[in-house]
Image (cartoon, rainbow, N blue to C red; front, side, top):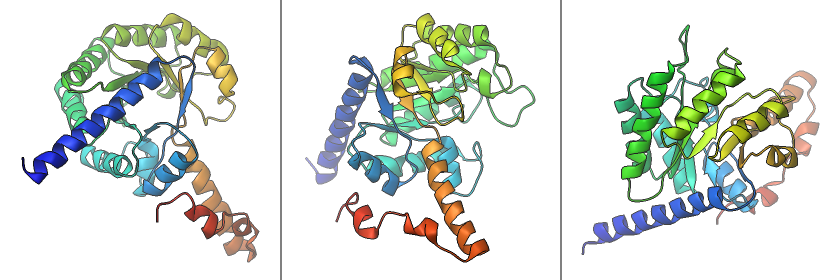
Length: 284
């Protein structure tokens, strides 16, 4: 057997092991936190802090390249995912927006490419950016999730497919329609369900009680983050951070730079971790 074949087999086994670990996180009792790193350094820091898995953030990935959310190509999003995958031995999933195309076939190809990039899970949204009516009709939305699920099931390892209902962040804050969509995506085979932007714990509980698959909730929205205990009590299985950690880091950058530029002082920098402390999170 050639060295390249041995390497390929080892990588596949490693991805399979990560996939099994990721699946087990969703099946074991209780809840878990899944942060969203934006580069190799933040990935390694979060791993050192004890988190068990990661997912990317489309907004953070775009921010790293100096763009707004929704402005990455599929190739750029997958390359960003590869950087994070290669930075850790932990499972990594990805925020793949609407699958980078309207058709079910395009979404299916995006999932196939995600697996090739080393990912063990991904989310697909039921809306696209830059449209007057961004949310897909339910029939097409279900076809897109079904195509993603079919591709995920064809892989030689469990790939956790998250189906997202974007109503509350795309101008249609209709809880009944959101739940109906999540139920349809569940029936289509999605492994995890997610409705970003739910306004209160009552809505969170309504979603959690209506579906039988694990539900994701993203913290970081002012006034709508709630506590881990509250979210767990409302039926949430996994708690992600979307771009909140990236925004927190950028807030530190803006505050320190603005103070230096406008006031000529550096107190914000004095609060920063010393290099020797930061290096403890990073490999030699």
